[in-house]
Image 1 (cartoon, rainbow, N blue to C red):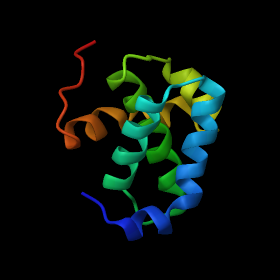
Image 2: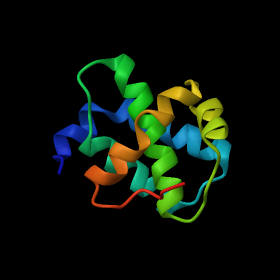
Image 3: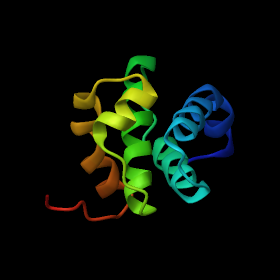
Length: 102
């Protein structure tokens, strides 16, 4: 879980998630899941925050039933597809979801 302070301290990254979600035309449920997962996984380095934000957005879209490809999310979030591929399953598991087996 995260604190209100985490939300304030990471406003820049939450805005980046929102901007990428706009590009992907994702709904409010996917955005909410993505923000919550990001705030629950906040890494120390800004470099890692970019990848965690993108992977959280990918995972949030999956949970909300608004699937987008890893490539689409990577392009919208300005990261590599590999950044998402390496992280999204762990983010889902840490949030209490079982990742798909495909």
